[in-house]
Image (cartoon, rainbow, N blue to C red; front, top):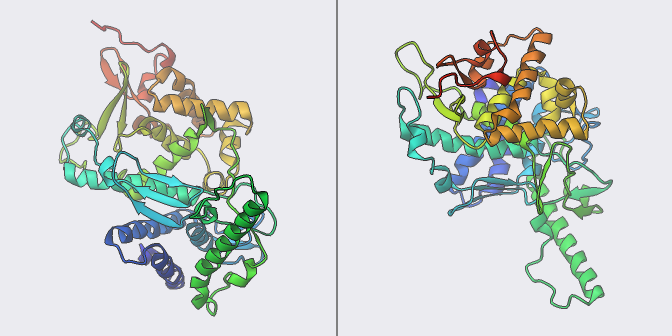
Length: 420
């Protein structure tokens, strides 16, 4: 992907990513190197997609003062901003075994990759294609998609509430190896907290200092500039679209749907030669039932298949500026453009509909699909691609494309006519 950058851009990215790789993988582990290659590949792809529409990021949109690359005239060029995001948002990568899924921990700034869990896609799902596929080749790409999903979460994450003169560190930096046994001794606890914060600050300074060799080429942060800063781990704000799952968990189906949509594109699973056939006719992909009347077509069968398909359709409705501002800067533009506002009721309803899609509850999703169709009509956007993203519908004894099914009736009253 470096060949898609200018000579100067390629040199800058290589300068910073060489140090980044050294920090994340000091022992030159080959598996970790692959993940870092993916991070760089993803960064370039994001940059290429948005550089013409969002060439600069204003400090008004992200006013965190302690990124590695400093702004110029109150703004970052897009490539600098993405480099900053990667360095700030990822402190470690771990390869794990067991039953855990892949995960990005926004507080620890850690990505966990479980290769065994990803490869557990059931054989019956792999057989749910029209012409068959190279399963080994597909599983490699499927695994890559899951990694890109977590990497997209990492690039999306933005500190929500920034305090003045405060540098934000991974939560592990503020945890001591030795727990204080005398919990009632407040003085001892205060001293312990101060030691932890000082240790975290020094650790952050050392991390920043690794980039000091580039100070003659670029305007970068110096370790001395954070010497008098407070040290904290940020507390992410709960967004309107986040759904509370008792007792303690929040889920954001909007973030998950669009992140999976991105991961499919950037990993290459959405466009590849695995599903190519030499004959015309039915699209060769996975056909996953939603219910008796609806089937999803997807290249990536997972928990977000349906909501990611909806995200594909919505992403085509929204400008690149609005999309980037929402998912990479934490703004409300997408909601305002599509829903007309960003408020607790509209955002939460939107999120609940995407959650219903993940639960394969078509009735709960139907009004959202209709809203997308109507939005496209009102804005003069073709609905042709919806036949790829939206479910097939069982009508008059056969499966038809969603848009074709609207000719004589609406999805609300579609039923199998001869269930016997």
